[in-house]
Length: 161
Image 1 (tube, rainbow, N blue to C red):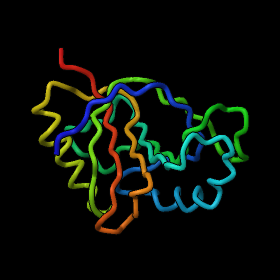
Image 2 (image 1 turned 180 degrees about the horizontal axis):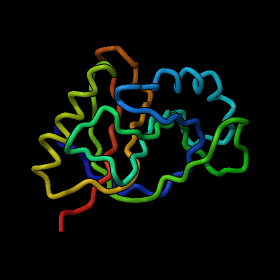
Image 3 (image 1 turned 90 degrees about the vertical axis):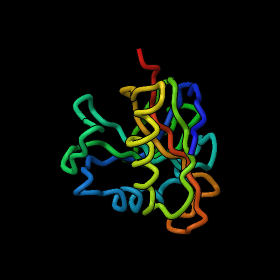
């Protein structure tokens, strides 16, 4: 599973977020509140959904800690921040280099893709993690728990020094 390396340009996102941990995963709650309201976002660029994780600088990917807190977003890319629905917020995703992987299969098997990325690919690559958000693009091939589902997994990277 080799990624493609992309230089992401800055993106404007509008959505909702929740703080959570892996042991207290509130992803379902977040998406349950966002999905009925996603059509209120009038100035979207595509119909793709973005599931984004924002980790602070103390989050250690080399030592899995199920109690480590992070912020998860359910969002959509927009052209501008001129019209933000009530109880939604803007987020500017900074430009930078990303390794883009395709996860094929049910969403619940995604951990296998992440194990490969962080346990095999990244340590053996010419890259290290960069301190920017991680995200998944849930496009038209995304079907949640369907074994034929596909999503793009975007991991922020920079070249090793």
